[in-house]
Image (cartoon, rainbow, N blue to C red; front, side, top):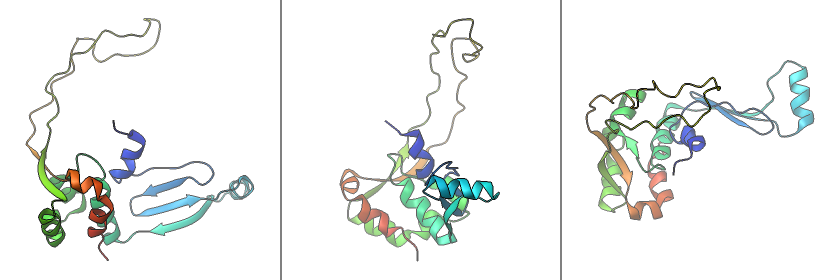
Length: 173
């Protein structure tokens, strides 16, 4: 199963944390809110953000995080998506690391499964009095257009057991 909450972190998406000690990330900026109610309330009363710690990430930190966080998922790093999002060539950027980890049997290149073509759509389980739309009520979801194969770099079984050793290889200083 996939934790949708954690998936936002692993995919390096922006997220906003509200409340005591909550963490947020917006592009290359991260911050954590203060941890006590008194500090939080005081900051809000002054019209200030209740931030305790802030950090601005370098390009290398963003590239590193995007790689090793994606490797925490079963899909791994979607090579083309990474290249487009960060305007780099993933395979060239991490060529030495990838070669080393391939030779150690910790990572492998593969193809991410394509989305299903058509999914049967069940009848709505909700009472008709609810203001709720259930698909287009046609009985099926629209077909997903043909997509090219999605090349990924992912952990092997051995790599899963030694994940932290793999992740540290992708840290660019």
